[in-house]
Amino acid sequence: MARYTGPVCKLCRREGDKLFLKGERCYTDKCPVVRRNYPPGQHGQGRKKISEYGVQLRAKQRARRYYGVLEGQFRHYYELAERQQGVTGENLLRILESRLDNVVYRLNWASSRPEARQLVRHGHYTVNGKRVNIPSFRVKPGDVVAIAKKSLDSPKIQAVTEASGRPIPQWLDANKDTFEAKIVALPNRDQIDLDVAETLIVELYSK
Image 1: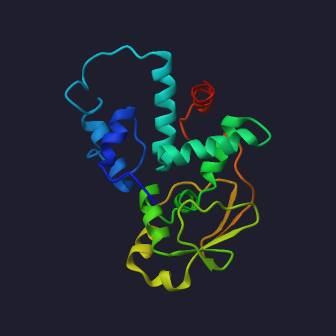
Image 2 (image 1 turned 135 degrees about the vertical axis):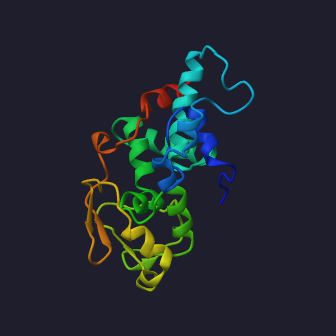
């Protein structure tokens, strides 16, 4: 599956905010957003007016880069969200949150979403007892996500699970002793702590 392989810190600088794509580095003074808080490129420090379309585009790019999804798949998620009942923008975020790599990140089993994607690809996690190595696999309420027993001895898995983690959202019922978590429900908008303007994304795709 295709993925972005360029320097991720440039993505954060382009959006003008931390997207937390480098794990622990994002919390230090070494973060490029702190050191060079302007867009990359030779014209990054120049002033430029942004059109209405530009504002909508930035909102879409911001969300897409948060979750590490390329344009084709992101558009597919939008079309899926549009067909569901409810608010399209909230449906879109709910779909993105239900990706296995995002769930692994939310459970503090990876320091960033890119790292979560890599660890999922290496087969370190199971869903309902079965090993899943597809980062875009979508979980549903009632599913149980766990660290594979053979992976508990991995130095990398031990390092990420022992690190001080972020608060685990309420829609995930995690057991820190067994390294298992049940999907209680898919999150509501107020349970998704991302600075994403989903209404602008809907406006962009509705044109």
